[in-house]
Every structure is written in structure tokens, then in C-alpha cells.
Image 1 (cartoon, one colour):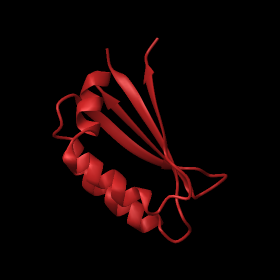
Image 2 (tube, helix red, strand yellow):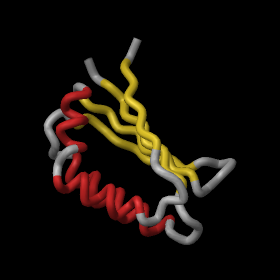
Image 3 (cartoon, helix red, strand yellow):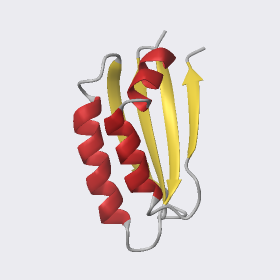
Length: 95
């Protein structure tokens, strides 16, 4: 059963373009990961520093396998430097 992964990040002021570039780079790699279906990035209207990435995967195992890759780990380290607080990651399934 397909799952959704929601990642919410709060970005330091002035670092939005850095985040956007990093997300585009990592998504270009994720699209080739086994089980990846789709991904999108949203920005909060009430707080523009809050960004939400929603990705769809065939299974939580596919997501976990991708999350554990060196490419994804390097991306996370890169992004952690521009966050004001730790990212929150949630896994959701369809009912």
C-alpha cells in the first residue's frame, strides 16, 4: 500500500533559495529510487519560513531504504544547517 511522507522544515530567514536548490537536487535523485511515486514542496502562507515536502512511496520500506542512502543523508546534513529547529517527519497511509 502506498504511503505519504510529510517533512516539515522551518528555515532561517534568507536561506529559502538554498533550501529550494537542495530539494531540487535531492528530488532529482529520489525519482530514481525504488518505490518513489511523486513529490511536491509547499510553503506556509501564514509563516513563509515553514516548508512542507510531501512525497509518495510504494511502501514505508521503500522510503526507509531511500532515507538511509548516502545521498539522502548528505542532503539532510546540508539542510540541517539552515533550519531553525529540527525537521519533523511523519509517515501516513491511506485509509
